[in-house]
Length: 419
Image (cartoon, rainbow, N blue to C red; front, side, top):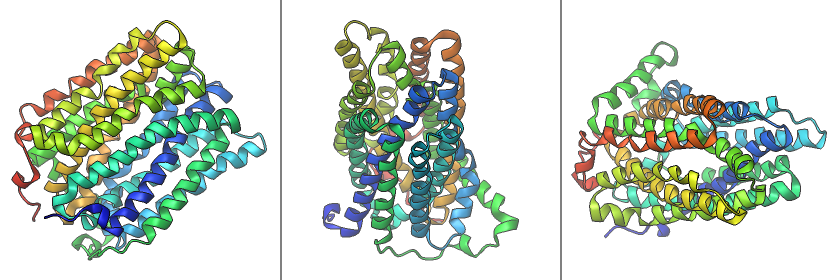
């Protein structure tokens, strides 16, 4: 019988660190666009640029993943990345004290925190595989995703309140503190990190070759290839709207205050908690592969309902919350099962390289989606742009249908990742 992860102190410590950090992130994800829209009067195009800069560092993940593979301490990289992000975020409330916050600074903060986040994410994959036994991948991802979903419930509401009471730059300081807490908790975990063959290869001559190996593995693996194509398509279309344009839509089209926007996003995020908690049960019922497919449709499709957001303020906020509820449920069902499936098919020796290549393609397309969304919103308006995102995102299912993914019922039926 598999031991409960709640009895594993190392996992609980890691879970706690990620939970605290996720709550801080939700505040910043709301505060940064509100700084741009409210205090600096940013246009739709400028908000789109902010979203793009947040995700642009993922374009470097292919090379950074190969670099991380050569580093002997993945845990140390994660701690350093947390501390770097904390320091960068603190610059905003400091600048606010002297009334010197500019859109340029907000752009730089988004770019640099994103870069540190890529390093953390690439190291995370190897660390997670050493921390959690293979049989508990889905359970662990469910618990971590449940925390993430819970942060989407409370984080925006708290963030919206903090922005109204203390201003957005001061609210960002809370996220900085959360990264420090995460660094302390992750740094205290003891995990066996044996040296990989990649750590012994000279860095300069073979870094690009190592990065190419991760990309080649994905392209040749039918499960990873289909999953990446589906996820990247989802990311492109959902980032046509992105958090920034959704905030702009709620602020200018729906006429909602920062506090109400936060409450609507928070209420909608309860769907994410439901999706994360029920993902293991649903995967056992219909299979991991089919769960991924269902999530791929439920994530974007509900946004076609933005056309129904009319009437009194509570009705407009209710539609926004309802759309977010169904969408958040879908994305958790998608993420929990696809992340577990991906982890199960990647060899230990290639984890960071594959993670880097996967991130470059999957998250690297987000800036392109955000910039395209900004241009579309300028030309055709916010509601039509969000509708295009919903329909295009749902069509990502077409990548999965001819692949082995829908037929995979459990991780036990997937070949073990050996080289």
